[in-house]
Length: 81
Image (cartoon, rainbow, N blue to C red; front, side, top):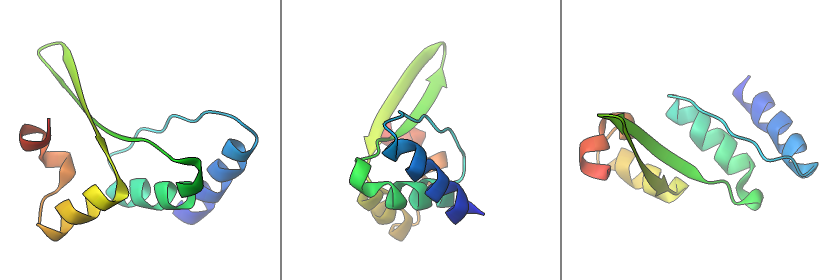
């Protein structure tokens, strides 16, 4: 299902449409970003604390390195932001 979704989003992007996706699924981020890689997708880790939005741009390689270090980026706001 995730592959189908990513391919569908790729067709939308090919038509020139900008797409914003929000998810807690790291697998979805990796799948969609890898299929849309030629479109140069932007991966942002976002955190809202005390009414302030913080963000950090990540690459697929960043995610891979964090996973190899045993760090779940969804729980790493304190060290990444």
